[in-house]
Length: 176
Figure 1 (tube, rainbow, N blue to C red):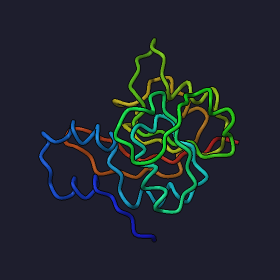
Figure 2 (cartoon, one colour):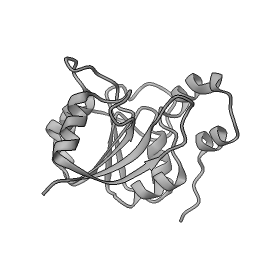
Figure 3 (cartoon, rainbow, N blue to C red):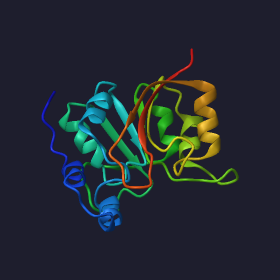
């Protein structure tokens, strides 16, 4: 395995107080990456990340040798760990050959528009990596319903997490 710099993971493992959670979410990512998770994702390249935010996960994946393209509806929002292009769910239609990565897609209710669910309407690739809570505080009920009906979990890996959260890495393969 290639060595990877992971300041967020290192800081979290060193025991930062829960009061540091919000500043760290905005500086790095909502999901705390582990090196095991990064290597598992890198093996699935090429990758397109939707809702990439700061590009922190992409920066780690690039260190692991992954080919990754990042899209976000607000790519100008600092800080920037990796180049993030303007783009949303509709842009996924031209990236069917890439594994789709979504890290902590925004929570939406049954009646709200959900970026993660909308992504599945445009992306028809075969492998999906989802980082978040299964039927918890990420994505929407429709997104999870769609995953359960159309994908098979091939890996579920618990991640480092803040107290009270239950996020994991899920690698899913589309049903034939």
